[in-house]
Length: 185
Image 1 (cartoon, rainbow, N blue to C red):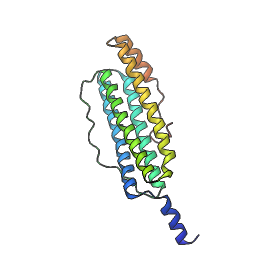
Image 2: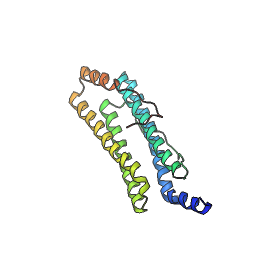
Image 3: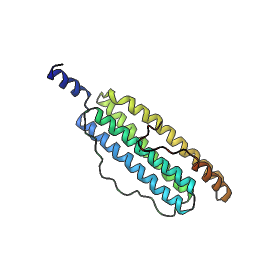
Image 4: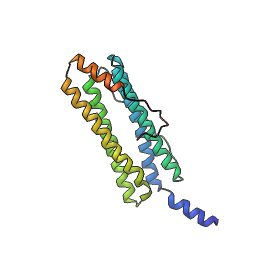
């Protein structure tokens, strides 16, 4: 191939500078989500609920996998992946189990809206190369929100019943672990 043809092919893969910035913001948000889940896990550990804490740590790891998917996509498109400034999670100490999962759901909803906005931006620019990745994330966020919503429903049903909370703790703690470099699906 001639140099001009190679440059044209690479240029057609590249995202615009504006879209690249939006993907970088999403990368940052995914890492922030990981830290939020880590802090929520600390709150569960403080209540001697190791299973819930482990489930939350697994979620934190999954958020890193998500960030890595965005990083890989940006890099594969010959753009520059970058992590922006991440502030400490706004998680108050002493949350109840219900409040822990309500905080998790609120953060998942924030991530879902950010992905939908990223999808709208990519569509506006005619960036169809991002669609497979963004479709995967739309599906993933539906699953994430549904899972946390189901847990919230169960926690509400249990209320303050210690044996019910311990049973939920045991069940959530049985979730198999995946590393942060795994292909989470």
